[in-house]
Image (cartoon, rainbow, N blue to C red; front, side):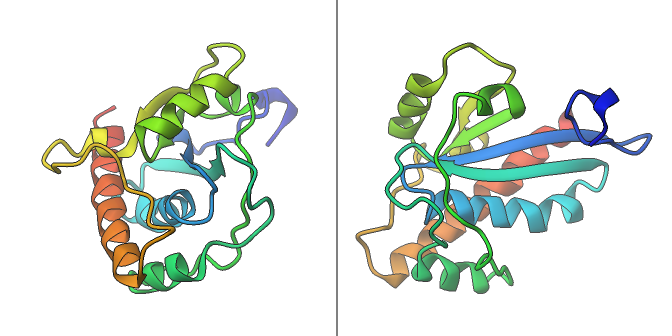
Length: 171
């Protein structure tokens, strides 16, 4: 970042910068999975976009904790290592910092709205809104489920991330 850029990372000519924050309740299952998937898929599927990616939780249950071991296992099946990610809580300032705040479900979208103090620049949406061919609108919380539920959620998130990238590429 440079002082002249107003805190926005510099982007090479012909490329654009897109800042994305994924949000779920605790920031240890769904949103870090989405963060890690966009970090991996973004440069592959949209090389013209410089992605700034983060994730947060609407609740502070797991501050500084790594992603749930079951989420990490499900992500590894996609070739994604997210062990270095750490949970944080959604902040009001995030609405000014990010272009997109992508929530995993409607409850978290409503909780995010409650955190927002001013409109900000962020578009507040749900991930599966970008995948209308999927019957669900909310990515279910797998926390109390078994390992196979985490694998199913990783597939849903992968589908949503690919559709979201497609939307970003359209402009």
